[in-house]
Image 1: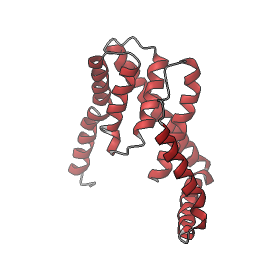
Image 2: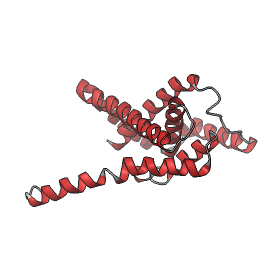
Image 3: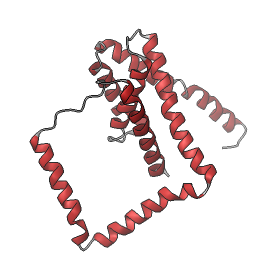
Image 4: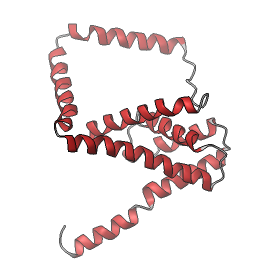
Length: 188
């Protein structure tokens, strides 16, 4: 379930990046790649190409088959597929809107589409380092993206802290209140 949710979230973020990138030309720049990195990627591609020749390929095929079945399962029921894709889209858009609001509050001179694109790129990069709730990896990626876009470091850090306050810390209070009510009712 987590892999399916992560795959849908990544696909939605990449689609939104593809939609927003033409509206903000030059904002996202690919890093320069060293020849060593290119050679390492080519070596990895060769190893993947030779994988079917290895004796443990049957186990890998079974694992890949299981993963693909898990990705197809929600699409057997339209309501689940709509919830998966709609939830992934809503999550990305609402988090981008929170960051846009925070950047406005701290006075950053970035257009809303630029902030949304930076959030989507940073959250996609942070997904490569899986941490609980993206804590740490998303914060660093957001701060880096905002400063790379030309905002001062202190303002970028303030925006990231405000974003985290609104998306992580503030929602804990109602959650604790609901948990307390459920414990008092002996529902838990």
